[in-house]
Image 1 (cartoon, each protein chain N blue to C red):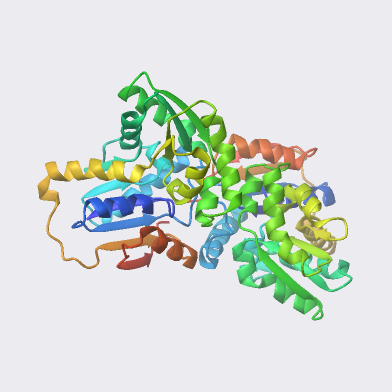
Image 2: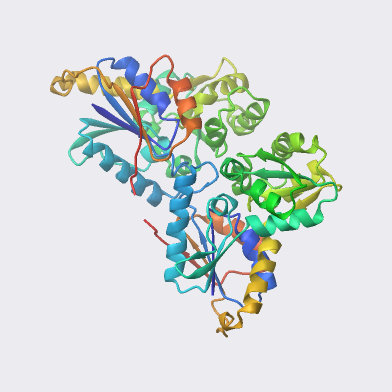
Length: 262
Length: 262
């Protein structure tokens, strides 16, 4: 079983990719909805919450951990947690962007916490020092995504405001540096146009985890198929459940539970 | 000393009114910034966090408690907490709206949690059963206020979207049912026009607390003047500090501290 966490809905875009790549794995997803959003918090607070979430997932006997939140990934610097492998979204997403850019001008939209951590700058520099990164904090995109305003003129306007300074730098690749942003993909496509490649974290981290599991076949033990996907949240919300089903569709959740980390 | 709390910046609009009404009192303000916003959370979680905040303030030896957050006030139903008087914003704000409406058609903008609690409906019904309340959840106003987008065309558009259905009901009075909303007063005035009275919680709750203290003079003990105003937050943020000073101006904060409730 793989443990995955995010502050809220965003990490479900990663969970969906993981399930598509690893159809025989079991997953437990933790959405820390009581304390979202993470991206406006300090590094110390994000790290504290990340450790609490990883600790909670470890107690459920998972075999690997995925931090499906850029703000949390940006503040996590170890490949493992108490003996379990930890996968973050920063490295695979950077690698994907580095592979696809042609003019070496890459844009980043992310939370204030992720931009402030400089994690993407460092990661891209390690992969290809010739790449220029143009970063823009986009603090209102998580609230818009959590509200589900996916097809709305106001979403287009706010996306335009954040993306315009990056487009003016002639980027050809844009990292969606927050797992909530794929929820607003329609507006991002409209604003950025077909000539800019949008990079999501989901499939990139799924490919990295799949390669790891192929090298460590003992971790892919046979499981009874039900419940295959469990979604846990730290706050109860019908709004979350409705949007979670929409994001994961056609994948269905086998079990929903409310949990208390405090 | 009076203890005041809110999830973030919003309650500072109440603190400012309290300081203006009670210039000789000492205040300690707790902004639970690590866990904001409250308005999208469930009633159970809001109540749990409220109790933790009140408990924390009580340990600082305050003599009265003010819940300067509508979402928390809407889920708090006792006039005291462990022997200390508790003042919430719902009743005084409702009383002010009831006093000022001429056509008995009152609008409410508030968080999803406050609207869902029906607290303002119940409170206004008790004061004047002839009043009709038209309520609109405005979940994106807190993120806009926390971002400090006070003079921005996007703020005007989002305020217009939320206020328009209420204005169409011919309201003459609008309750700003979240203490963050006075931060966006300029946009609210522009959208609602001069014929609609905007009701803020700050002065209403300050008047109620002042009346209480006049009846209980033993609580207004002489204090050394410094530090008169202490602001505590559960997360560190330069952004918060900058905006806090702007909201409170010309009142200055004597002491800032980071605290851990967990």
